[in-house]
Image (cartoon, rainbow, N blue to C red):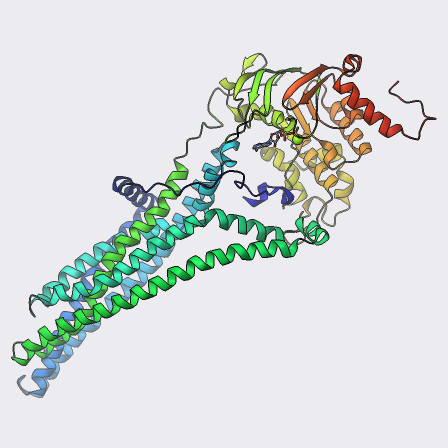
Length: 633
Ligand SMILES: Nc1ncnc2c1ncn2[C@@H]1O[C@H](COP(=O)(O)OP(=O)(O)O)[C@@H](O)[C@H]1O
Ligand SMILES: [Mg+2]
């Protein structure tokens, strides 16, 4: 995720939009459906392992009752031997040894099965985690840009990616434990009921309060975390600013480190107050539950003791009772907490399914575009960003043909970058249409159209990878072609500084990883340009080279680009008229509208906004250089 955004470009998403209400509780039907899908997920991940785990669970379920029964027989045999009722010493000893053998066998089976189960579970969990992460990452790749910018979708992606990994195994394990507990509970209860009908209900009842407390506060804890998601993200952002190599310069210079720290701490204090309240209430209720439970177990014991006093049970029976109490309580609490655990894990799984069920139109839907793009025409294009209430582009009509350079000019916020995003099919127009070679582009799959395009975005990526990767990402299918990588670097004017790096093309970039070199803004931009050249395509787009290049460098970059661009479509967004004036077609945008359009001479002749902007810049350059004959005439 993180490598996809330039370090300085990681903005706090979603803060723009108002906080959302927590998701509506979903019905039992949905939970059951999710339960089935989750178990299906586990089964698909590894049918053999899953079957083995289920089979061994059944063995485990029978063990406690077997254990208790052998222990009871042993106790009775010991009692008989002690009282001399078991015949001769040798005979009694043989009988005791036989019982001991059975008991040892039962314990041995239990530990072998336990170890095999543990190993199986761990491996299954690992497989599952990988499969789910892959599904989430694949889904993220299908989302539209607009969905990424929607805070709710972004939240749900983050939640899914962060929290979901271990949940399906949790659901599966809990379903198993549930079944296992039922079997154990049944068999142990059958043994205990012989001691009196009230014993089992009393002991079971004693487990209820503790389980109730656990489940109630478990759910509350989940809700709390979900409620805090927005604020936690803001806090994380503040933390990331404080630990980010790009931000540190401004933080030091403007001295707002303490301010960030203070705000970070405020969020923590808010979370802390909620956590403390939760813990206080949970402890209070836990105490009450444990007292109630002790009383009920005392009652059950009294029932059994009364029968013992009347000589109605053996010593072995009493031993069975003592062991049985803890078994029943444990199994019953397993049972109930299993149910609430499944419920909680299903809430997390709902996050995942919600995310996976998000509608996507699919970048690959539609006809596949093949061949070069020879013209792009925008007809009456309007655009509004999702969740905003203002059109950023209004009735834009522009056409550019192969061999032409289209320059977009206009003030900051005029909509130039947005237009680039529409032309690269990252967004769809809200109204109007885009024609490619005269055909409606919406017929074709965006990804196949994009295969013909190469772009340096205004917020181009600075990937914390090697130089070679930074260039080869432009066309991963050709990544092995070293000569092409170097040619692209040369054309972009990046070869010189790359050769000066200790490990040249294998040098790591950025500061996150060992051996990484931080580059200057202009150097990063030349790498982005090399990426563009490496990719090629019939449409080349360069959004605001000025952001990091000086005027000379920009001129050189654009000249190379234009030389390279013969027979292609070139689109340039720039504030520098030295660059802009060379374009065959110049489009002046103002607040989302095209107000002037034509070539440099035509626009000057129009004596409108373009002419005014051009002359202002030219005059700025020429101030004090009167002796020079201005090229502006
Ligand atoms: N992702 C976005 N969501 C909402 N509004 C946006 C987004 N990106 C840009 N805008 C708004 O769209 C307008 C045009 O932005 P942009 O196309 O980046 O302008 P330019 O590149 O000409 O400086 C601006 O008002 C900006 O605030
Ligand atoms: Mg822009």
